[in-house]
Picture (cartoon, helix red, strand yellow):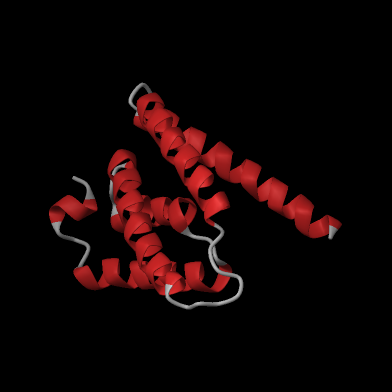
Length: 132
């Protein structure tokens, strides 16, 4: 049976994984799904589909908290709603399309797609870091 179903993972382990993910997200400005999904699959024992849904909920709550803190700062760099609005709208439409596509893929195909996407993003980031 899956570890999270059998009670072998204690709440402290899950809390520790979440805190570690939050720290990396806070320091590097990344984390979201690309770190949360592997942590939930390998560290907590969730199935891929469960990990994706859980990750999305965590990202949503985290993003809303960050937005609420950011909006009230009154900093000169403020939020550019002309960028935020269209970007958010396009992201929501993309998420809907992604949901439809993921329903057609098996768990193993989702894991492979996720892995290939991570490698592609890592390659682009490495190329960018090396050229700057």
